[in-house]
Length: 461
Image 1 (cartoon, rainbow, N blue to C red):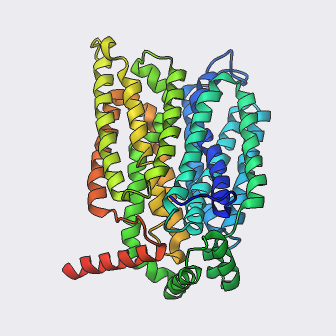
Image 2 (cartoon, helix red, strand yellow; image 1 turned 30 degrees about the vertical axis):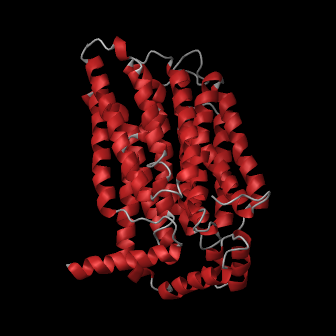
Image 3 (cartoon, helix red, strand yellow; image 1 turned 120 degrees about the vertical axis):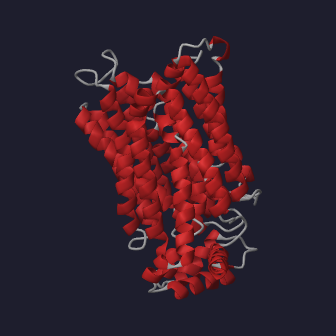
């Protein structure tokens, strides 16, 4: 790992983006501490308690907004730049929490959650693109994982603080963080060289690249690589979209994001307190959620120390197998408990397996799909690819979070875990066959590898 200077513009910019991701992480798990309060007649700020169906809509509408946001904000990155687009994402977040802090109506909460989702879709589309472009091949894995760290710190914050605050006070607190992001990123956020070169501003691109690289890096060589790739693909968007390398990259990205969602992670995070209650854990559900949040953040921090030391593909394969080995036994436990079998001797299993699940997820399926998404696409179609992949990811997240409770009511909690576990086994097979290793390579070298790989496959057919 490269040493970090007292002030490094790259790390400062990415840490500011991580603050935005923090707000999204807290928003993702907002319904876990807030949902039970909205359903309780003594803690709800509404005129009357709401139903579980209404809570599920509040949870899932954020993910639906994310699908739309990933398509909207991606059009701004080449028009106004990555930096200005990221700044614009703080605005809907702030407005949403102001609405939820001042107007206590379910319909307003629905609208606010959609606004939060719009921003989230933009963040997870533009954020990895931005972090991938300003980082070098030596530290790209670490820098891209900062967004994931920020998200998981937000998850922990929501679990740890949300249960002990009133709904309105918690909404007010979450509304402060978008303002902090706007103030920080306005001063430290730097535009990427790729954006300047796409818009034929070579001198600005050279200046940006010099700010984003160390003295030992060959800036001119990298600048020429970026220009060469830009010239090769300029005006060839349609042909690039039809090319073998793009299709291969899209299969890798979409496949990994589907695997991420089909692991069940968002359903677990949004309904963690209810899951621990249904599973019959011998600890208070709120305490269980805090433990999960601590493990989630801690494991994401440790991930940053070895992401650039081991291959992406190796880590993903290990994570997929580990997730399956957590969810299938958890399903057995829940199934036996529902069938009336005495499980008192092993009531520690839900929190143990859930903790191991989070460890495995955050060392693979959590950060790595976004890291690879930022690495495998050429610059001229990167924004299109990001919007498509992220839209699919958020749409699937909406379906899973909205209908998770329906699945549990229909087939039981145990079989639902088995379904997620089977998806992880399918993901293991997918990773082994399709995923390309990108560790230690420039974005341009990765494109060359994709071209060679597709060419070799095509020549054998």
